[in-house]
Image (cartoon, rainbow, N blue to C red):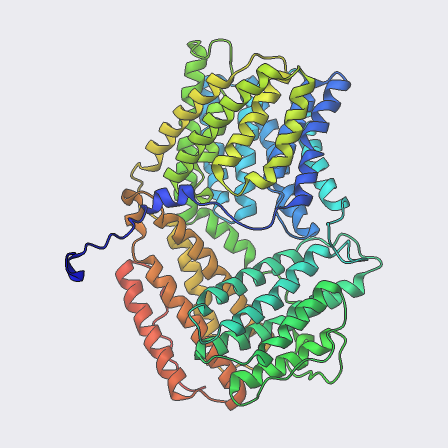
Length: 639
């Protein structure tokens, strides 16, 4: 045998980020309630249209229900109103605008109109997930309205679109959630979200002093973001149960000082006893089962962060109906934090995001991809390239889902869209030859509607399901089988979007990432300044801390997507992950400093030195990366 040192050790070759992302799928429990809603949405709507002799309206309603099903994600009922309703309104408006433009403008005028709409919708999509979904649906609606051969008036089609999405939203509001506690129907989503926060606090406490602490802190941020969104939005009922809702909001507010103390303990790097973690776990069970918190084990009070944890547990006892809770700076001063807007300047922030560098780059690429695909599609349509399948709107609709940067890295979207379309088209071709028409196709639409909530875990799977559903609707509408045309147009859209995605743009590339990172930097700066000023307003401190961590999580998500692009695109955001990591350490250290200030009234040298070091390092790194406004002048002097 050769000597041990001479034996070659083969290490597995890591996949490039753009390919690894294309193969990655989301995980989690199956959303059975959403599956039921999907089965009761598109298929029954299409069947109703057939039975009343208005097949075209049934097709439009089924398309709207399909798009609403894509936005039917876990959460509270009140958040579903915004998450499903806002995009549905945008889609109906786009359908109306597209129908009017398609009837009144020629091919050139229509192309310019759709390009302008793409610019506006793309810029608005940079604001956030709901705005992005609305931007997607307004463009999809406009393309369908302009190019889909539908009998009847534009107003009737827009009304059918709203009815289809409204039907799924009504199912979301009316159907109970399986496994919810008795009597918790109205607030089951909110209750689960708040309980998850307490579980995330316990997970972070258990991970203190281990290598899992950073991931658990990120999970706590995600849980707090989800709970904040679940409690936001319109109240569905203001009659009986309002006291229960106020109690749930107070329980959410009581979790904020717990999260602060847990973050400070994780920052210290010292492992904790099981007793220190048990209290938050018991509170999670109490929220989930809608019961009192009961006796809570008190952690040792040997350090400032442990004393803060004990005080936070005492305050939480009051929100859970316990006794002996302290009231100084507790939930009573901040119980409305979940309902408060993310800042009084929210409207200005929205406009700044849409018109800023990220919004301009986003809007320009969406406008180019949507406009060019619409122009190419109309040119091919007028040269009869489509033959018997005049679905020219398929090309711009496909481009909409491919050109949106927040839906994933460009090459990943293209690969998944191409693979999913080919799979879905071939699958439909086989099923269409076997199933009776139209009964079998209606059942196929219902099945695809049920599969959409599951398929959203991977873009290729979602594309395959949507392809089968759309081709079924085309045949129910009286047109021949169009699998080959669907594949060809999808591949053409992939080429167009790949070209548009790599075109040089005026100004600095990576605008969306830099805009998110700039917002996170500003939020972290505001939090640091508030803590170092020595203000006793804990409610404002918790609000600023939430904003700092939330914007940082959004920046992290944008950076991760950009890093999974092809090298030609990924290089434009190099170094931004280093800035995000520094911001994360800065906010963690500031949280630990805030807890220490509460206890001792002043900063000790380790906190002060670490803050000064991070601020200097952040300023240097931000200057090197070219990120404006990086806070480097704040002094960590004792307040």
